[in-house]
Image (cartoon, rainbow, N blue to C red):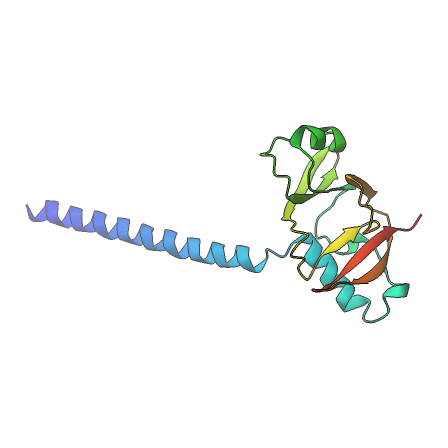
Length: 170
């Protein structure tokens, strides 16, 4: 009987250790995800704030200087575009729950999505860190950019906060 109790105690100890390790791993993973979860828009915004200082009139940005991964094309798809249309735009089968309140960024390399980000957009409550590609008055449904494209930065002063408009230098 004692040997059965010893085996049960050992099993309970092993299970407890595994649960503790799983719990600790989950906590560290969650903390890491939250820390690194700055959106691509926030990263671009911070890059401009850091590198352009108060001289945005002469500021030029290449998005590939900000990203930490390799890509060929950037697709910026504004809110209101469904999955079927996104598939046509990016040339890759894309299946997702349609959410018409999100702006989507697709970075593509060799016909593969290497990075994707959905950013909830609420025009009635603009947040600091917003970056708009193109003219803020007439946003296209989508835009396509190459890795080598350069953008001129324009600072837009809003009621609630400032944001930046990036216009392609052609």
